[in-house]
Amino acid sequence: MQLARKLRTLDYFTLAFGSMVGVGWLVVMDDWLGRGGPLGAILGFAVCGVVLLPIGYVYGRLVTIMPDAASEIAYTARVFPQSVSFGTGWMMMLAYWIVCPWEAIAVGKIMAYIFPALNSHQIYSVAGRPVYLPHLVLGLSLTAIITLLNYRGVRVSATFQNWTTFGLIALFVVFTTSGLSHGSVGNFEPLFAHGSGWISLFLILQIVPYFMVGFESVPKCAEEANPDFKSSGFFGAILASIVVGILFYTSAIAIVAYVHPWQTLVKQRFATAFAFEQALGQRWIVTIILAAALLSLLKVFNGNFLAATRLLFAMGRRELIDARAGRVHERYQTPSVAVIAIGAGTAVAVLFGDAILIPIIEVGSMASAIGWLATCAASMWIDHAPRQRVVAATGIVVALALIALKVTPAVPGHFTLHEWIALLSWIAAGVLLRRVR
Image (cartoon, rainbow, N blue to C red):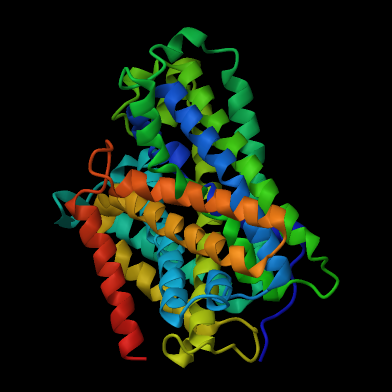
C-alpha cells in the first residue's frame, strides 16, 4: 500500500522551515551570545546558511530525479555499498529524531517560565539536573499528541504545520517591531564574545548545522505529493526554507542584542524574553514571545517527527531493518509502525530531562553534516551535468569542514568525551538493529 498523496508546495515549505526553526532562539540564545557575541552569532548563522545553499541545491535536484521517501538512503544506494547507505540514513535519523525529545523537554521549561510552580515535585535527577514531575507530564503529553497527529494522516499533520508556522512568523513580526524603538546599537558592544572574531565564529559554526537541519525533510515526504504537484516545487521549497531560516535566525539575534546589553544575557534563562521585558518594561511582550516559542516548538517537533518516521519507514521497506517498520496503515495511509516507534523512542528520551539539551545540539550537528556529505558525494555520480558536479563538490567541501570543526582537537569547542559517547552509542544501536533484523 502506498502513502497518501496530499501535500502541496506550501506544505513542503512549512515542513522544511518548520522543521528547521524551533525554540533555540528563546531557550539557548544565551549560549549563542556566549559563544560568539552578537556579531559572531549573526555571522555564524549567515555564513553557515549561505554555504548550505549548495547542499540544498543538491537535495532539490536529487528529489526531482528520485522522489523517494528514503532520501539519503536511496541516493547513496545508487552508488555505494548497502552499509554506506544504511549508515547515512541512520545518521540522518539521529539528526531528525534527536530534535523531538529536545522540544518535548523544552515545553516544560517554557511553561515553567510562565508558571514557576511547575518547577516542583522533583522525582529524580540526571547529571545533577532535577527532573520535575510537571515537566515530565508536559513532555510526555506533547509527545503523545504529536504521535497521534502523525498516526492519523499526513494531511492532518501538514495542516497543523501550516498554522503553527505562519502563527510563529506573525508573532515574530509583532515583538521584533515592538523592540525597534526600545534599544540601542551600543548594546552590541563588544561585537565578539572571545575577543578574536575567528574563535567566536568557529564556536557558532559548530552548532549552526543542528539549527539548520530541516530543509532536507522535503525529500522524506516526496512520495506524498499531490498528483497535480510539479516537481519544481520541491526545489523551491528547499531553497526558500534556507533563505527564510537565515533571515529569521539573524534577525532574532540582532534584535535581542539591540534591545538589551548582550553580556548581561549570557547564562540568563530565556534571554530573549528577559531582554524584551527589561527593555519595554511590559509583561505582555513576554507573553507574545512565549506564545511564539510554543508555536515554534510545536511545528519543529511535528516536522522532525514526520521526517524521522519517513526515514524509519524507508529503512523497513528496504529491509535495512525489521521489515515491519515499512508497514502502511490501511485506513490512514501512514507509516503507522514507524510513527509508534519514533513516538516511543522520544518518550524514553524525555525521561532524561534537560541534561541532554546542549550535548544533543553538538551530536545533532555532526550527524546532519555526515548525511549531507554522503548525499553530495552520491550526487557526483547520479547527476552528471558539469554544473551540478561543481555544486555537489562545493557541498562536499562544506560538509567536510563542518565535520572537521567537531572532531579536530585543536579547534575550540570540539567534541568532548560525552559527545563521543553519545555518537558511538547511536552507531552501536544501529549496528545492533541491523544484526537482529
